[in-house]
Image (cartoon, rainbow, N blue to C red; front, side):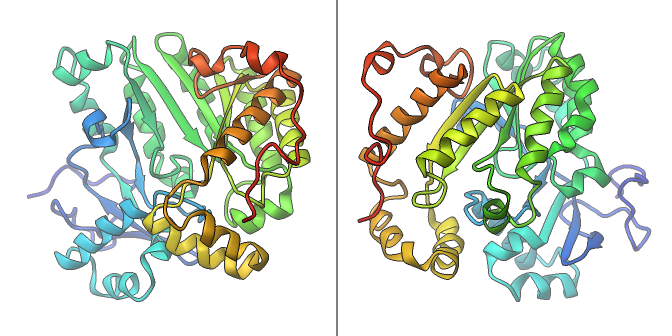
Length: 366
């Protein structure tokens, strides 16, 4: 049985609207293939995320292909299930299984074509999810994919999600992205801001364009992201920056970090968040070989630092946090994920302490 009439934004080559569970090919772009998916649910509550927020992800997989991305695990399960259940076209199944899962994550993108409809059902006025969210818990868009990756320019799923959220006052919303494409939706973001709390977080780990191209080969340039912050702020939309992840030995140079914080503050960002790289199972499979190839002098240090844990040492993380807090005070920008976080408030102890020697503030090399 058809799920709904064909949508011109999601043409199916066969001309038949697929049944639930199928992943027909929507189109191709260079070496990236897009698949249509019918999602039963797109609003994941705190029991699913394991965090203090709800999540919405319009896509599975991400074409930006950042070497350090932690979200590759989610894509692996989706594609493995599709291959096992024979819901992919034969040639697509062969293409998916011919490459490692970490690479399939950035080459085979699943488009949740019905995400706005599914979200509207989940947020039915007076329903249990709607009432729970009115108590103050946040919906975060883009926790396991970039909601403004290249697919969004064509398929506009994220835009549809925002249109649904604009109809529900009193929500607490956040968006995480690397893409200046988000400024396309400044009108609807401003409309949401008049009735709900909404904040945009731009991910930016360096202002060094050449280095960014090595680490994030398909992501927008640092300059374009800084311009996006300024445009969002001009539109009256709260916007901050996540300096996440800080890559030990690569993007943690004190001068590089200071340049980044200074430029972020100059662009008008309201806050910054910072965290060192975490290396979980699937991300490790991609990142450690990348380090061995691109930064071989750091390979032994990474192997030692992440041998027993997905986190780098506590000493490193504390030193990094202290250093960035001082930079925040120097350039007049809050440090913390959200403005109301305790960590975002001025830290008297940090303010009164003598500035640490930046070369000793955080150590990585073993």
